[in-house]
Length: 441
Image 1 (spheres, one colour):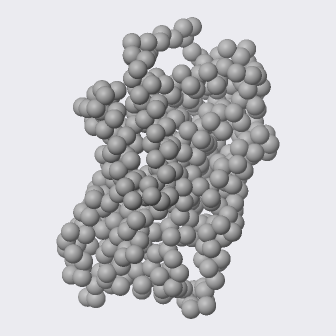
Image 2: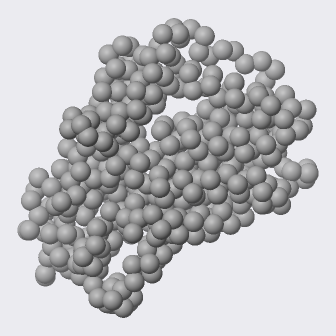
Image 3: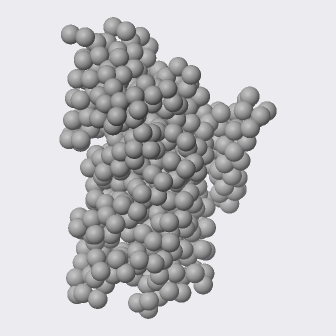
């Protein structure tokens, strides 16, 4: 059997495994890469694990450690509490917009799960002291969605960007991968529209879907009632640890920006910056080494490291080109419209990511779209960016992403995600498609 057909069969099996979600994404990624390495003779065995040496892998490990230090020292929580107690929390709609802005910005540079974990108790505390003016269930959903969308605004905001970037780096001429803010030009307009959404039509949609006046409004909402007092969990943490964690994160952000310009790009890249940040946090004792390593998202990390083999196998076998030619013929062959293909890629990615993992969606579509771009003689980078950002738009189902599962204890049902996240998903997909066409081509 021709290698290209074998590679396509492996890819189809990988897609099915990702969709079924019965195996961890790391296991699926490793099996896919191993299968490519074993059954595709054109592929070097070293390509099976080459993703672990790509610059994105040490970057995500390092920034996970820096982000964890912010939460473990209580810095992120204290910042959030101060903001939550300002005049911006005087009305429920205003508080929703405020939290949405903050979560969007914070999750662009730190874990969106950590951001939501931090803000849910803060929202509950503000709601408890508002005499019914603010209801936690009305605010937590927008906070979660804002964290998801904010996480797609930078390369480090979420893991699916890194999965797509890891595959891109496996292609000759694109070893440097994506830049820290390459997706910002696409997602900034979407992030702004999302915030406007919550301040305008999104608020009535929340009321319509959640029915805050009904007797069952707060059913199963663990954040509806809080204890009378909450101890200062972080009072025992020395202040200097919090200061080091904060300045390390700020330093990393500055370095990420500088790494895109000469002469800094000669000695800084995202991998070096991530390692530098982690070295400072662990070297100063801000975070115990054993705890830092134990809390790392190893399932995601192994997926990021292994998944590049799937793209490499499709590429060297000719399977990607075979798929690309089929898709091109559907849209006009050699005269295929880049605008039409961009729209199809954005919509397809946005829909699929609501039913399978965002990492799996990115890993599945990236090599196919790279092959299509190369066959058209254009850079694959714009479409990799489109896939990277749209794979984060898992906002219309309760299981689309870990953040959605994380906010379920606030009492949301599957239909709530469809009613609230569904309209926003349509808007986000349209905005991302438009901004991609305008800013990337």
